[in-house]
Length: 83
Image (cartoon, rainbow, N blue to C red; front, side, top):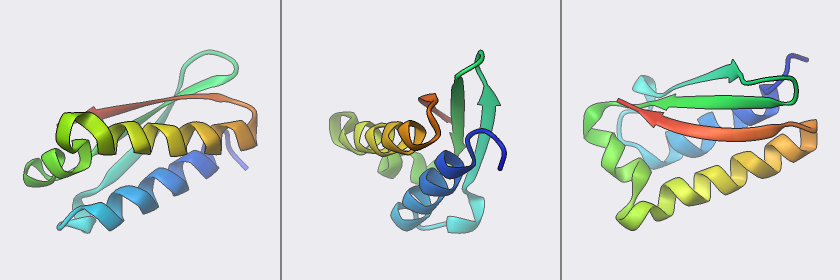
């Protein structure tokens, strides 16, 4: 199993459940040192606001879930939302 695979699956699942255009969701795992990764999340432009949420609440929740998934793998996780 590659590093960040659990994080990738969890973040992809959560984001696809939130957006209208689930086919446009892309989650890319980028190594960030020995025990850290960055999950880069891309969605359709029309769905980005939905993923970030009011005052960033949804984004914060996604980051929390990703962090817990990273704990399962013993890695630190950062989530970036890119357009």
